Length: 276
Ligand SMILES: [Zn+2]
Ligand SMILES: [Zn+2]
Image (cartoon, rainbow, N blue to C red; front, side, top):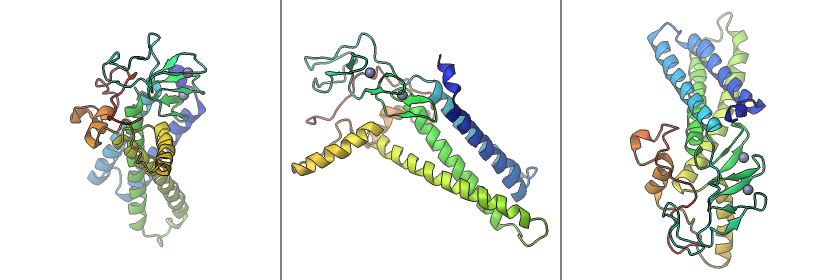
């Protein structure tokens, strides 16, 4: 079932785009710049290949990992006391029912119209991975964006470095100018788009916020301002704690996309006191 997710046009597009980026960077720009046989060329090829492999690992982990189903046994805690994993303490946010699935929704869970089901700690539905980004695959998604950004910046730097060292007046090179310009513009734009996306998700990671919650926070902050109050995101437990909740407590496993042993049930979350 999950392997069927791979059969989608956006996934083929991503793989095609990465394949193109890898091919032109290695066999065109690094080869032209220092040559593939030189030590500088070999080091750059190895580093870039590892980065692309890391991207592919994160990408497939994100595509093939289920973001999180609501357990059929899930019942909200009407008393407001401790629930299954003894972390949630507030009844108000727990008594939400999905109008489509007709089941209770845990806190931070949302219904995805594309997947036609409720997803735990839903961030957004990503067409490029043909999957929802939620509780179990957000870490892989974050590493996917991080590695894609680093890969495109790496490629852009190599294109620019290679271009400035070229003697464009020498015979034969003038015709190559168009490849450098087109690829340079393409990779620069891709770096900018991915860098912006990465910056946004670093902000969300630091504040323990999902994309959906960031929209709710904007509205919440506006309403609070109107009432002369200050808005506080209820799950923002502090910079370091927020990072460890997603990446894990062990810093050595922070950058391993599938190291999610620290995650529990995804049906309840610790909140800061005195927020609603
Ligand atoms: Zn639902
Ligand atoms: Zn979805």
